[in-house]
Image (tube, rainbow, N blue to C red; front, side):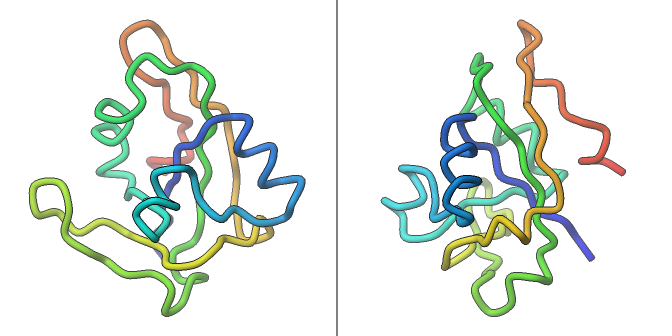
Length: 114
């Protein structure tokens, strides 16, 4: 089933790990849902919202584990983006990796596109 992805600050990821739950970054809390991206949307999301940032983590969630909390809604350019209307239990995170900045773009782990 399709994985969806979240880019967050490393400190926010560490806090979520400690709490066992991720309720969202500041923008998520403001908008009322957790913003996710598909693998195909991820590079644009990183470029638009995290350009130049090196203090980031990327984590993956199996979209089928979110049930009715997951909605696919139009956003940037009319594309359907995965939005989660509820907190994410960290036990549902498939994997998490640093998202390094190479000076021109982010280097995504191979698992994103596997």
